[in-house]
Image (cartoon, rainbow, N blue to C red; front, side, top):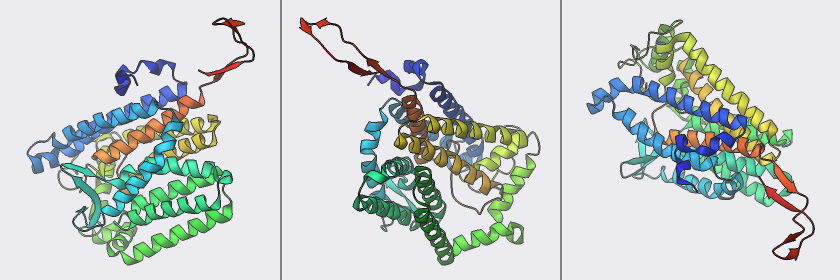
Length: 400
C-alpha cells in the first residue's frame, strides 16, 4: 500500500473516485472539522478546572483523530471483500472484551457502568469499537441468508444476542438499543420474513422493559424525561440544563465559545450533551445546518446503497447510514428532551477516542462501498493475435 494514502490530504487517488465517494469524503471531513471546533469550546472550561489546561481534552482528541484517519484511509483503499473476510474475527475479539469489562478489577467503571478496559493510559471501550464490525457481519449474514444453513444462521444470531446481552449487562441500554435496531433494520433491508422480524422486535422491546424494571436508575431516567421540571435539581437536572442551553441559543445563538451552560451547569457537556452546547452557541439556524449535513449524508448513503449491485455491499451502506445518522438523531433527541436521557455520544463531536475510531471506520466503509459500486469491469474481447511468440484465443477479463 502507498504510505501517502494513509494521510487524507496526500491521497492522490481521490480524483478518480466516484462522485458519491468524493462527496461523502468531504462531508465526513467537514463533519469532523466542525466537531473538533465544537469540542474545543465545550471542553475548555472543564479541562481547565480538572487538568489546569483548557486544551487538555482537545489535544488528546486530536491524537485520536490522527489515529482514526489512518484507519479511515486504510478502509477506503482496501477492497471490501478483504475487510468482510476478517470482520468476524474483530467482532469476536470485541465481544470477548465486552465480557472482560464485566469482570471485577478488569472493567473500569464510570457512572456505575463498567464499559472500559484500561490498557496502560489507553481506555478501550469495546461496545463502541464493535459497532462497525457488527454492521459488516450483519450485512454478511443477512445478505447470504438464503445460501447458508440453519446451523450457521443460529450460530451468528446467537453471537449477536451475546453482543447485545453483554452490552446490556454493563449496563448500557442506549448502546444496546442502537446496536439491536441496526441489526434489525439491516435484516429488514435484506428482506427477511416478517414473522422472524416481528418476533425479534417484540423480544427486544420486552428485554428493554425488563432492563428498565430491574435497573432503578434507568427507570428514574424515563420518569424524569416525562416531566424533568418536577425534580429539576435531582433526576431531571441534566435534561433541564440541556433544555435551558438549547433554548438560550434562540435564532442565531450566543456565539462561538459564549455558552453559559457549559460553565459547570450542564453535566457531561463534552460528550453526552455536546449538542446542547452547540445549539446554545449557534442557535436554531446552526442546528438546522447541522441537521441538513446529516440529511445530506443520509441521502448520499441511500444513493450508494441503491447503486450497489452486490447485496452485501448494499446492506453495509444501509447499516453504516443507520448507525451514523441514527446515533446522531438519538443524541440530539436526548439533548432536546425528545427522548429519555441516555449516554450516546454524538459521532465525531463528542470527546472519546473509541467513538472517533468507530465513526471514521464506519464512514470509511460507506465511502468504500461507493467506490466499488462505480468500478466497472472492462472486458477485453480479444487478446493480441500473437504474444511472446504464441497464438492466443478467447478473451481476457480485467478489473479497472
